[in-house]
Length: 186
Image: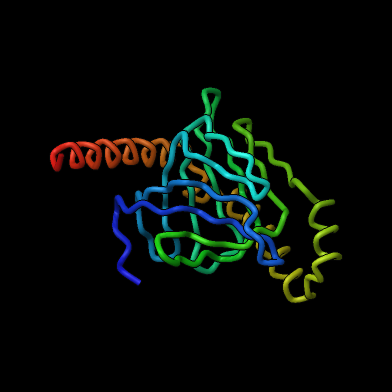
């Protein structure tokens, strides 16, 4: 695998435990590379569900994918503030310019008011039963959710409004730079 660099573009593929693709995002651009995670950005990117339904995201997003954590975080920059959509999921892997992870149903939604809500508990319970999640997997998933909530409550940088707006500015600059670069080559 080649080294990952600022400005590299990736696709995102989200799978379910049974190995089936659940959802794909057309583009995620590398904004920052940290020791434990990579920060990506996108805006109005095409999303495709497994059933073939497609749509474009409505707002800019800053995404955090972790090497060894059982979650990923999407900061959605909406007009009325930042909403965080946090997926309980396996640590990412990268294959052929594609970020891949397995989604384990439970989600943490954090609102601009500071309130949060755990989503999809029934979906998790259902999939755990029909797909046979092991006790070890169940423990890893629940530990991931607990760790994520603790990071939020303790003011982790990934939930910092100023940092996420700064990352959005970086994303816009990177996109502008690469667009100009493309025009120069034509």
